[in-house]
Image (cartoon, rainbow over all chains, first blue to last red; front, side, top):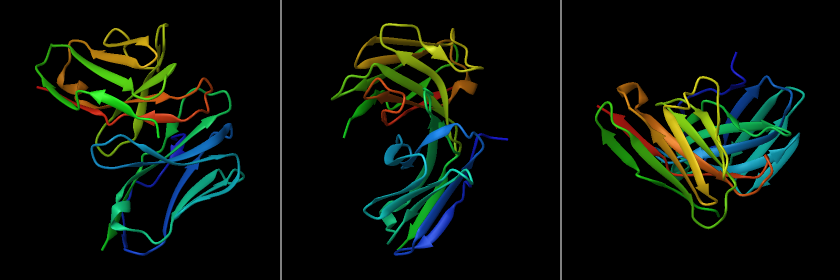
Length: 111
Length: 117
């Protein structure tokens, strides 16, 4: 079993839709949770960063962490064609020096 | 935000040759840099952690004699793929951390696509 599971998609939605992206994990030591966006043939770009459980909002993006279920989500409101990319979840433990990534979900927003 | 560059962006080489990839933090000092490998439609796999002025720490299964890492300054780390073979063809991405804590943000470079013929 992988430490971090993420549905690779692709997820195809119409412009303006609300998008929900999710990851599950098995290591209860993970405390820091991140979402990265990666455009084709580019490096990942940090979108959201949360610590422990709870919600965090930044513009059209909302990150949620449910540690009891070992489940994290990224919501994108009013999705735009420019949001089309691969979204990677990543997490690390306190004192841990490395990030563990999910496989990434390909998102396609159609105009 | 912090910027990390990589050079070259893509390289094609013959089997048996060595290839050097540079990773630079342009507007901040990075005591720690990371090297990842990404296969098509797969996630990033950490290869090694590089600390300025010390030896790199390699992940299990990564050959340190094949993937030589040098972190000579606070803004530059290099990855040299020695005696490259077609199975080494991949997308190599570096990241640089802007602080000394494991939870400080990692900023990623744009990646280097290596093709070994």
